[in-house]
Structure formats: structure tokens, C-alpha cells
Image 1 (spheres, one colour):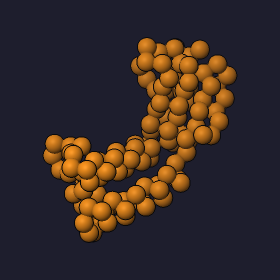
Image 2: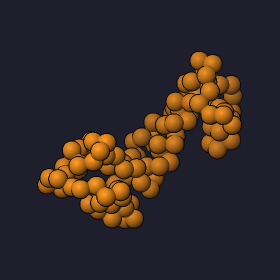
Image 3: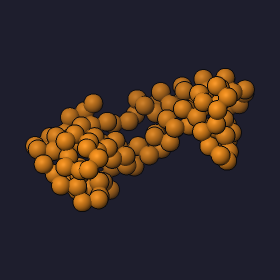
Image 4: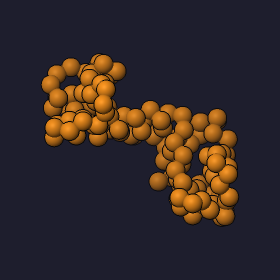
Length: 118
């Protein structure tokens, strides 16, 4: 098993700066938390988009995900979307699906180091 010493590089056993894997899951690593997921590079932007999407769904139900700027305002400002909450949510989810197709999710076996796509 791989010992976790606080850095994602130690857990996944690869250089994170090369950008090969955007979201990498390691099952069974010896950590206090159990399985480990490292989000790097463009995966951070994708994860942020997924969080904004969850916020848009929450706002449609009358709840807020943030204290400051609403996810509706973020989506409109940062992605140039126009319309009411329902139409912005639909447009944003289409963008999220496009981004999802470009993401590379992999699973690394901690014993063998073998990487398999998810």
C-alpha cells in the first residue's frame, strides 16, 4: 500500500504538473480518511462547474449555496449566459455536459500502480 504523507503526489505516485490525469481516484490507500481523490489542473475548473450546477439547482428550490454572489449571477457573469434562472440552468448544464466529455477520470490501484479509466 502507498503511505499518504499529505501530498497528492505521494498518493497517486505521479507528477501532478504534467497534466496527464485531471481527476484521479486511489482506492485503499493507507490514510485516515480511506480512499483518496486528487483533483488537478483542468479538473479543478470542472469541479467548480459541477458545484455551480448544484448551486443553481438549490437556488431553483429557494436555497442558497453561497453567502455572497449567487450561483445564478456567477453563471451569467463568468459564462456569458442570459435569461431567467431556468434557462440559465439549462444552458449551464449543457456546458457542463460538454466539459464532462473532455474530462479524464482514472482509478489507480495502490498495490500495482496500474491506472484504468473510469
